[in-house]
Image 1: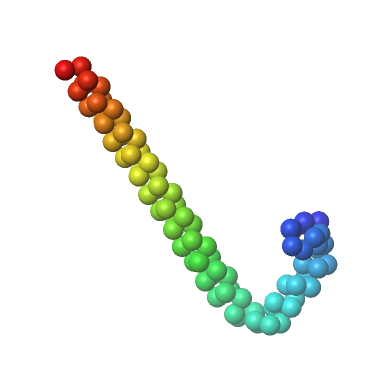
Image 2: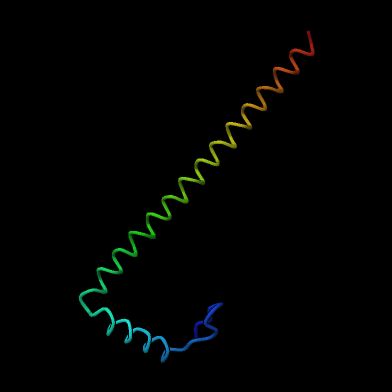
Length: 80
């Protein structure tokens, strides 16, 4: 049994009925094309999310490096 937040609990019968409805609506030839485009969309979304995470990590490490360099300059300036 599968439990989803918005569907409650659905069983095998409900899943089969949904698959049959999708098959009737789109046809057997169209479903692989739809799944392929869906997969490409998910892949593109994941690449975008990973790119943003990498960018944020790079920015935060650059800021840490800059702040540690600034603090080193400040401590050496105070010793003079």
